[in-house]
Image 1 (cartoon, helix red, strand yellow):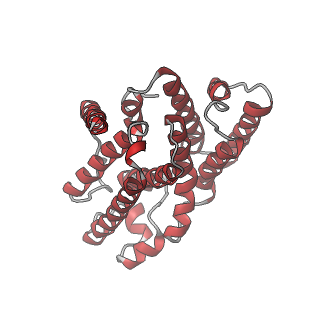
Image 2 (cartoon, helix red, strand yellow):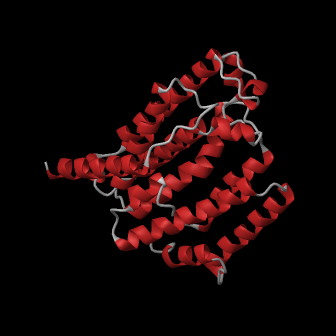
Amino acid sequence: MASGSSFYYSFLFLPTERRRAITALYAFCREVDDVVDECTDVGVARAKLAWWREEVREVYHGKPQHPVARALAETAASYGIEESELGEIIEGMAMDLEYNAYPDFDALKVYCHRVAGVVGQLSARIFGYRDPRTAEYAEQLGIALQLTHIVRDVGEDALRGRIYLPLHELAEHGVTSDDILNRRDTDNFRKLIGFQIARAHEYYDRALALLRPAERKAQRPGLMMAAIYRTLVREIEEDGCQVLTRRIALTPIRKLWIAWKTWVWEWRSGQG
């Protein structure tokens, strides 16, 4: 896992076994995501995802070849990671080969669930929980994180010919697909991004409301990610939602500071 990643800072404080398991999970997500992002030939990308589906099958029924798949094989049973769940993540990545845009939020939410909600649930399972409501918290948090990614990466996605903002909402705000693909930074576009940011905050709030106090200690890595990403989305707001022409990012030292501060705060709260 790259040392500049927000996830890296969130996982630093985990015990070794759990850190190894979450690193394997996120390495798997990175591998299948890179297939879609880096393959310019759709046929090749589909073939590679098919290969990964077979690797997932081998994790549970044979001998996987890829180092990441072998790492998953060592931890999947311990944390209840199911074959169908890894398969659903792959299906989410495969949606990028079928869709360059999503008609409405309901369609986008399916994508967010597969590529982030499922990952959130598996992550929470690795961190450990007892209350079943924590699974729903993790789903909502995963979607919030993905919505933050979508807002941050609008400009980069436009260069790839992709629009993750729901087309119905573009029309409601007087923005066209061509406006985004040609990176026209208009007042209407910024209002559209403000609307997307408000939705992301709703998902963060919904997630945190579902997490019971007794579960917060174990779920600190997720809370650290939430703190880092909410800081990022607030930075985007303060910058005037100019995501078409620039990419807002937090420095590594700031991410580490936010992660450490959240860890300490949650630890102190748990002592009360």
